[in-house]
Length: 179
Image 1 (cartoon, rainbow, N blue to C red):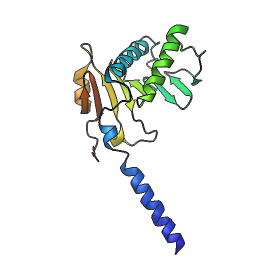
Image 2: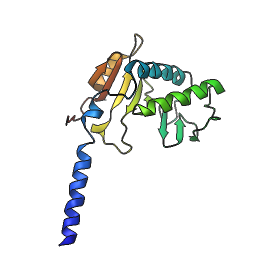
Image 3: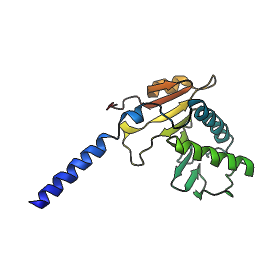
Image 4: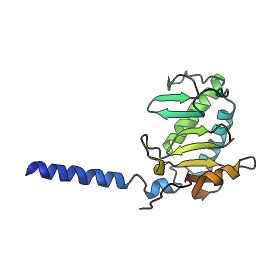
């Protein structure tokens, strides 16, 4: 009898934890720091990302960075442990330090990765990333400006929220559940 109680309790716990995957915090733009400060950091990081060496066309990855724990992955380069002496290939020591400061700041604001598809100049910043997330749960932050390729953005995505020049997007046909 006790075994059945544990199975029911475990099942109920899983059900409750899964219900928060697609919750309001992931479907709205909510940062710990001010919107202007985060937007400026995203714009500056976008400039630094654009200045990195391009990923070769034959590579199977798009231009990207990902922060996983204390390790940083940038484009096709080997993962690196984050520390003060890290040099990002293609950036000076000063710009590498700024890059690290920006990604750590953005991590505090729920942004831990970015990718840019080969046919677009738009950077998609992973927002409230779930490392094993399913298609319906992808959420990205996009900062748009006059030169942004907004046509592809609107064709491939649904806009969940907008604050100033920051958009929160999900895949066009993702099922969105607002709890």
